[in-house]
Image (cartoon, rainbow, N blue to C red; front, side):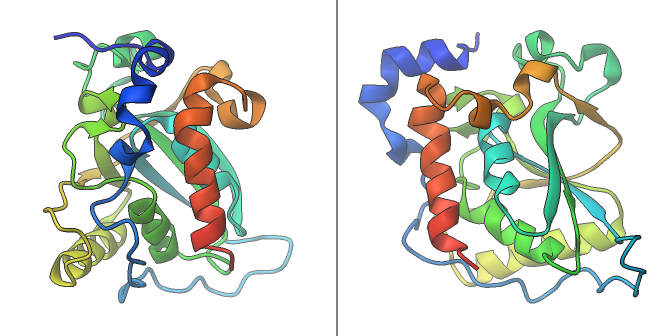
Length: 222
């Protein structure tokens, strides 16, 4: 098996698949707010914000980065790789699909403005967590739906929200998102950073990323 590069795939098949491939099973249904979340941060001086980070994988990191860059309370989003080791954390090797990495983003956020639970709600709203190792035109383990947790507190919140969505039948197929330990995050090559913002006319961006950006603006205006 081999994996087609993003741009080549889109140019050849976008008219066949369309954006519907990447929609959640019940796209019209607004997901419930998480009932569990991380504890609120302790009070900090205004000059010392208590920032946290979260690492999510939901298909192409170009799309996921563009989604979270819009949110109030998010100060930085970095595209990169999680789940594998440093020796194979390069785009060329990760694209082969056998390094165990996922294309992921590291989100730096202020929990007094946006919570981990709210980040998870955006995560599940903007990709299909019911398809295994595939999002839209991208296929392979590197495009899996995954939440990389730094500690037990994050794991409990992530697993509780998956259980909540499952119990509420938010999707008409089982959620296959994995909850994996974050051992290390490797920043991707410079040309991947802010890719959507810098390449709005790229065919892949126009077909797949920009609709997700618009969805966030519609669903999460607040």
